[in-house]
Amino acid sequence: MSKSTSIESVARMAGVAKSTVSLALRDSPKLPEQTRLKIKKISQELRYRPNPLVSAQMAQIRRSNPPKTVTTIGFLNTWVDAIRKKRLKWESMGRYYRGAKQRAEKLGFHFQPLEFDLNLYSGKRIEQILEHRKIDGLILPPLPRSTTELEIDWSPYAVASIGNFAALGNIHRVSYDNFNCMKEVMEITQERGYKRIGFITNLEDEERAGHLWSAGYLEFQSRNISIDAQVPLLRLNSQEMESASEEYRQIKRWYYAYKPDLILSYQDNTLRFLESIGLRSPEDFGYVSLIWSKNMGDISGYCQDLERVGEIAVNIVVDRLLRNRRGEPDYPFSIFVIGKFIEGRTLRPRSK
Image (cartoon, rainbow, N blue to C red; front, side, top):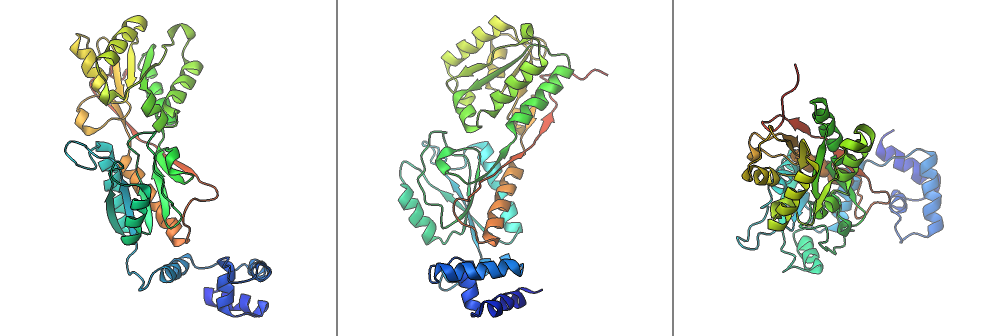
């Protein structure tokens, strides 16, 4: 049964015009509640399903005058290099952006970078700019800090976030699968004979990842490593890329106190420090970067498919646009994306 025939059938059975059916199915306050409920009940009995493409198009026509021919999805970036005044300075942010842009444009949407320094722009001012630029959907990449505040009314937009940030509200999210990443890395390294696996983490990265890194580490350790071989995780106050002399002193004390034969950390700063004080990898300890990138060279690590994360965020936004769903959903969900293990010089090779 076609959409036009179906809506005519609902209208005939309800004894109303097709436009009244349309208003009722949108919960328009222009109709009495009793009328809306009656029409909805009839539509359910007839198994009427609106065409989401037509619904989205009609919603766009109702919202703007004249209607736009291209729907715009924005990438709302709040990362700023205070010295160079450049955005997308974080390598991971650029990868999210490239994946999202490629996917949006492939699907025929206009993709627009939106760059705001939160020291200069309030939430209200950002809302005004989004309205002026006629933004329909929003990709919300990671905020600069887990404590960053961003008070924006999402109700006009189809929106999805990358990562876990309470400041963004109850919206659909997509991120990489930190828990299973940790599980896979520990399985691979344990198979290669590593017994004392240590993990260096920090408060900020744990908050950003919903504590899934440490959860995966502690769960695997309690289940697969004997108590006498368990190494306490080292949780620093600063992120690895911001480590200073105090953090490096803590790392040195931790290493010589517990003698891990394998170290898991996020980037390669810890490795560079340990090598600078005369230790060698993999001779003295194995090393795995949990957020590996090509600029780390031949270090062993786990490569997160961040471009794919950006693509999936766009898919979520497009789906909501087609269904004419805006703002915070009633039941927000999270999607976790897996990556792949990268062989490198900092691990002993597999046994033949």
